Amino acid sequence: MISQKIEVDTMDELMKLFGPFDENIKAICTAFDVKVVMQDGQSSLYGEENSVAMALDVVDKLRDFIHNGDGVDIGRVNYLCDLAKSGMLGEADELMGDVVAITSRGKPIKCKTVGQKKYVDLMKKNTITFGVGPAGTGKTYLAVAIAVNAYKSKQVDKIILTRPAVEAGEKLGFLPGDLQEKVNPYLRPLYDALQEMLGVDSYSKMMERGTIEIAPLAYMRGRTLSNAFVILDEAQNTTREQIKMFLTRLGENSKMVITGDLTQIDLPKGLTSGLKHAIKILKDIEDIGIIRLSEKDVVRHPLVQKIVKAYETEEK
Image 1: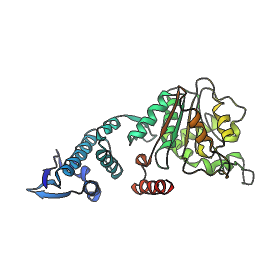
Image 2 (image 1 turned 180 degrees about the vertical axis):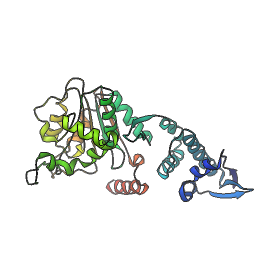
Image 3 (image 1 turned 180 degrees about the horizontal axis):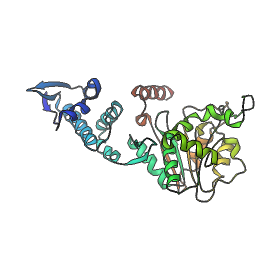
Image 4 (image 1 turned 30 degrees about the horizontal axis):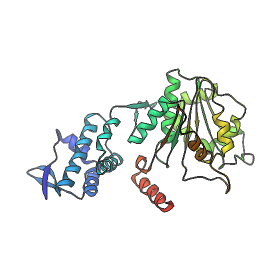
C-alpha cells in the first residue's frame, strides 16, 4: 500500500476537482478501490500502487480540463475512469478546446467522449454520415449543432429535419390538427435542440421563412434536397424502401446525417430495419461515414449508461 498527494494550485481548483459533496473524488475512489486520506492538511490517495497511479492519472487529466476552462462533472469523471482502466486515457486530450457550436445563450457545446468527437469529425468530413448508438449519446443533438453551424456559415441555405412518425407507419390521419400539429409530438427533440442553438425568436423566424423545415419522412418522396443540411432521426424505424427513398433525395451542395438506435426498432415483425440494411451495404462507399456509439458515449445521467449496458448484456 502507498500514499500519494493530490497536487492542486488553489482551493478553488480543489473544490472543482472534488465536485459537489465530493462526488467526483468519491467516484474515483470507488473506480480504483482507493481512499482519500488527510496528511498535514494535504489530501492524498491511499491504496495499491497500481490503483493509486491510475487514480492520480485521472486526477491529473481532470486538472487539465479545469485549467482548459472545461466543466468537470460526474459523467466526465466516470468516463475518464473507464478510459484509464482500458489504457486509453491519453485519448481524452482530443476533447479539450474543441467547440462544436455555441448556443443562443453563449454556452459552448463540446464533445464529451472520444466517440462523440469522431462522430462530429465524420459529419464535417463526409456528405452522408450514419450515427448509430443508444439513447443519450448525443446523436441528434450534435447533428443539429453541426447543421446550425453549416447554416450560419452559409454552407447551406436551409435545414431539413425528418423522422418516421408513429413508429414506422406514419399514420398521422387520426391525430387532430394540421400537419405541423400532427407531427409535433414526434419531432419534439429536434425542436428543442434547434431552439437551444438558435434561440426561440430566430428559430420561429426561420420556421416562418421555410429556412427550417420539419416534416415526417413520407413527405420527402419525390423531392430533390439541394443546398440543405438534412437530418433523418430515429432511422431504425424506417423500412428498406423508406431509407433508400430518403438517401436518393440528396441534391447538390447538401449533407445528410442519419441517426438511430438499433436496439429500439419498432417495426412490425417481418420487416428489416432500413438503417440496419443501409449501414451494411454502404459501409465501403467513399464519402459516407458510419460510426457506432456505445454505452460509454452516453452523456445523460450516469444511471442511463448502466441501464443501457444492462439491456445490451441481456440481448447478447
